[in-house]
Amino acid sequence: MSRRQIISRVFQVVLLGILLSACESRQNDLNQYVSSVLQRPADPIEPVPSILVSDSFSYDPTDLRDPFLVETRSEIAVGGGDGPRPDPDRRKEYLERFPLDTLQMVGTLARSETDNWGLIQDTDGVIHRVSENNYLGQNHGRVSAVLADRVILIELLPDGNGGWLEREASLSIEDQI
Image 1: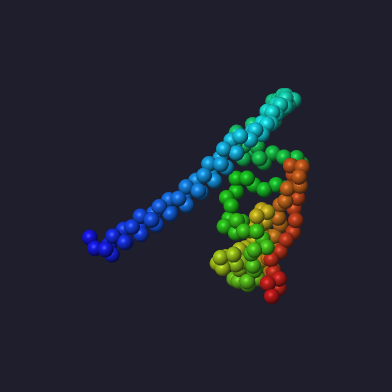
Image 2: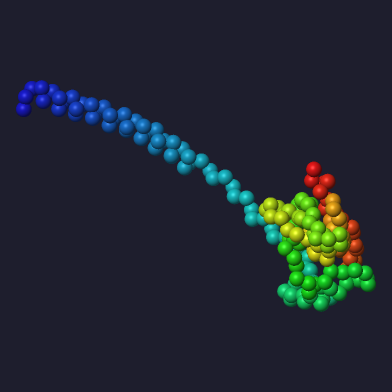
């Protein structure tokens, strides 16, 4: 070994000794802190809260409708009053799936003076032809008249007491301008 290698090795050993002594002083600080924490008295534990006793409730569903039974159409149709009511067995038409305010009247077609059709545009932009007795809107709206500038329909609305109320509504070309 050369003199230079020996000096280098000695220097490395001295440097390693200095580093190890620095770690030991930090270790002493940590040991002192841990021992001081362990000597402190523990905080008292809070007592377990008492259990509150609730009042009992008796549920008697004998007079109520069973929510798991499906009502038949005849049970739905039975309601208060002898007024107008929607036909539960009637097949729904395509335009009945849209709210009336989302439909637009875009024109009319006439084969004769008595045979008129209204042109109604749905939300997808598709134009549909309607005439008297067709249905549109979500309130059982039946077309009662197709005029040159508007389609008049009669809607059926529930009155809240099991009956139905008639309301006149219309779609007109002027509303869209």
